[in-house]
Length: 153
Image 1 (cartoon, rainbow, N blue to C red):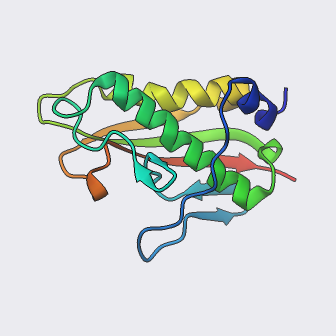
Image 2 (cartoon, helix red, strand yellow):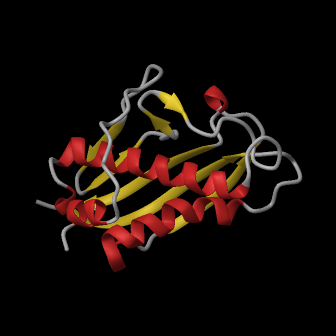
């Protein structure tokens, strides 16, 4: 099944790509690589699950926030490519988790995005990943993701 068909079969709608909230672009293509800027869990311009993991936000809510960030990243890829069919492979996922100093479940939170990428792209969705805990995050976001994708014609 094609990626956008897979998204629909999961009962998910790909959102409009969120606009930048500062002096940067939302994605860049160089050769066969597209990289998104940091994607936040925006739904209709409203931040979902604001706060820190281990305090105001649970690990399950963080998992859902990571899924939303991932959908926003996919919307950025589609804006650049016209179709997610042009994604050959998801190369790297950078995940930043807004958390307390004691929180240690960063991988479980970011699995929200990783699981979704594999559901949509299968083997081509498997990627390398970095998971970092951040004590302060822009706009009180619980999670921020950057996606790197190899693309073709």
